[in-house]
Length: 186
Image (cartoon, rainbow, N blue to C red):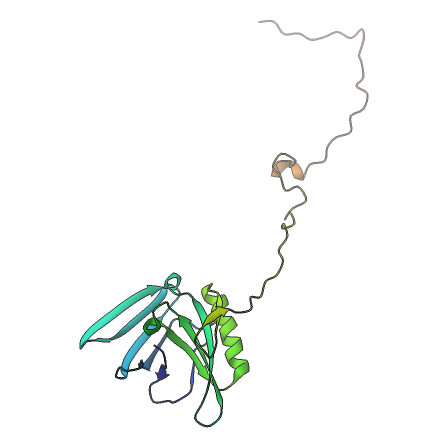
């Protein structure tokens, strides 16, 4: 879907990564092919694309794992502006899904990272020549988690009903001598 633009708009499309499911329509056109309309539905499970293929209705249901990543492509506009395209990138360029088309570079960067985090896909940067490379990844070093309780292992732990009781002090046991024992015989 190279060159995808939203219906009725020329350069504005923004889908919020925090609000799924979402529905939108775009005009899809590739070089040498006529412009077509595609209806897109995205939820937490994947993407459903409905469009025409050779005059026949086509519905594609794709999981997010079918995509290479979330890409950003910056192109000059006719009015000497820069336009950022954030897309869900597929190996087949006709299957790439536009997520954001904007002139605001800060919003495009936030959406690029937001969609990457939301979908669990890598951030890709598409250069002016069309080559792609992996973009910056926000990585935080992770160490072993601290134990949640003072006694994290079950072997070191007392049963719950014994936790309330205090352990008695072991003292000298008295020895009783010359006492008569009561023994019961049956």
